Amino acid sequence: MSSLITVLKVAIITWMYSRIHLVFILLLLMLAACSPQPNNDETPQLDSSEYLNNVGSDTMVNLALAWAEQYQQINPSSTISVTGGGSGTGIASLINKTTDIANASRRIKAVEIDNAQANGVEPIEFIVAKDAIAVIVNPNNPVDQLTLQQLSDIYSGKISNWAELGGEDRPIVRLSRETNSGTHVHFLEQVLRLGSKEDKTLFSTDTLLLPSSEVIGAEIRNNPNAIGYDGLGYVTPDMKVIVVSDGLGEEAEFIYPSAETVNDGTYPIARDLYMYTAGPPVGFVKTYMDWIFSPEAQIIVTQLGFVPINSP
Amino acid sequence: MQIPKFNSESIITAIIKIIGYSAILFVGLIFYFLLSEGLPAIIEVPLSEFLQTRWYPIEDYYGILPLLVGSLVVTIGALIIAVPLGLLTAIYIAEVASRQTKEILKPLVELLGGFPSVVLGFLGLLILSQYLREIMNLPTGLSALTGSLILAGIAIPAIVSISEDALDAVPQSYRDASLALGATEWQTIWWVTLPAAKSGVLTAIMLGIGRAIGETMVVLMVTGNAPMMPTGLDTLFNPTRTMTATIAAEMGEVANGSTHYHVLFFIGIVLFIITLIVNVTASTFVFRRKKRSERILS
Image 1 (cartoon, rainbow over the protein chains, first blue to last red):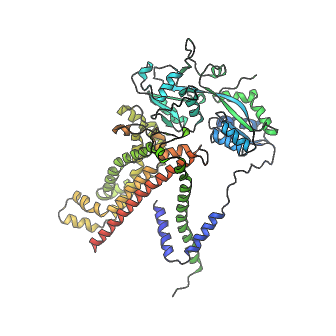
Image 2 (cartoon, chains in turn red, green):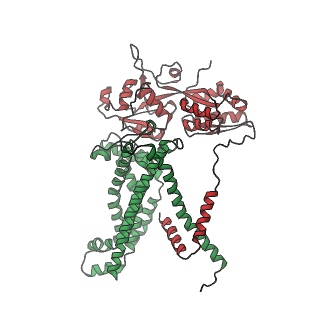
Image 3 (cartoon, one colour):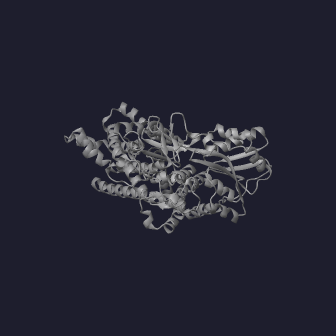
């Protein structure tokens, strides 16, 4: 701040002693006007066919990176560049033809497909892995199991004391990821609104929107009042995972999130992780996509805490 | 008659000139960018919607009131803590402490000011918030209070450093005259030295406000970011969401040119206006003070 004031002072003093100050302002304005504009439509230079660009979901960025590293070790001549930025960013890049593969932790929206087709891109969908969203509480919390209805009531603010759920007489502190996270949107649609499109329930306003999985983890570990949710890959042993039931059928069956329960469809808060290509994959993109479905690549999925897709 | 200048001098003058003007130019360009990106929000979202109390941009709820109030609560909380503490520390360092103590204390305070705010945020998240939750029996320690405390920690070094300089600049003759008239040391500090240094002290406080309201990383980490409307005096102990944290958290993934994007820039304009008001108030006040003291002195 003080340096800015100094600079301003110098500027004013200089101005007082100068008659050609206008020339400099004009010069600078011209410089600013002439500065090169970034061109978004430019595709990356493909000087070898062994190059591809992979942009998208932050949830999937570690997975995509691990795949890319492993593949480049096997095929040293190949170059795979992986960037995060979010599912929306990835799909936008695919539409703008700046990426070969877009990662998304949610399905592409109808409006995005329209935009893509208007730009001459036909997005092709691949489900490359699955992810369960685990509901987590402090290890000292006596509550073990919740139904989706109860979770919905907790997060919409209808239930605000653990005693109503068979726990201690403590206020419930609701933790959530930020609104731009794919996990947040998925939890809103599948849990808070119980999958109903007409339901317009929102998160209770006192829901803490935390910027990262690490912050959620820190609060869950320390605060016995807290409840949170996150991708299965982010759950550590010092948190307590709640067993969840969809509450349907005669006897509610409470399911622990795991690779098996996600794959057989019994765990209710699971989602698919997608990759999208512009048109049916050809050349190196096809080779890479085929490799991702190989058992070798799907082992990496398990190692990172995600759920591999069922091999046919 | 102009004395012919050396060539090197004219080059240096030109360089300084360019640097000087570039500062004005950059401020102007930033302001233009802010306006051009933020003003479309007023057309896209009716004003009545901005004054709603629900902030949930992914479903087109753009009520910025809870964010505005959140920023104010956290900043005012920080100032209530930082101004008395900072001022008293400055008085102690400048007026009371021995030369030796002063030489140790001042660099230490300035070192505190050099801490990256993200480090303080981590301390707040992992230690202070847990501690506050336990001793005050709060539902969660991620609250406006934690944010205020950490922001006070950030504002105090700025306040101390500048107020101390201002107090130090008060001529020794003022103090001597006051003491010679029979005033005690405390009377001298409170009625003579501090009023004489008022403009510098006010600048220090304004800079403190500027740092507190503009701070982003800390509030994003420790205030819980729940866009709640205050219901009463317990607001300070509840989670809250500030304007800066909202911009920082949401700008990353927002689609370029969307309504949400424009609204985030609009929040930036609101922040800019607030800091502008603070600065203008401060400078008019300081300016008036100077004139009056000049009158007295002459």
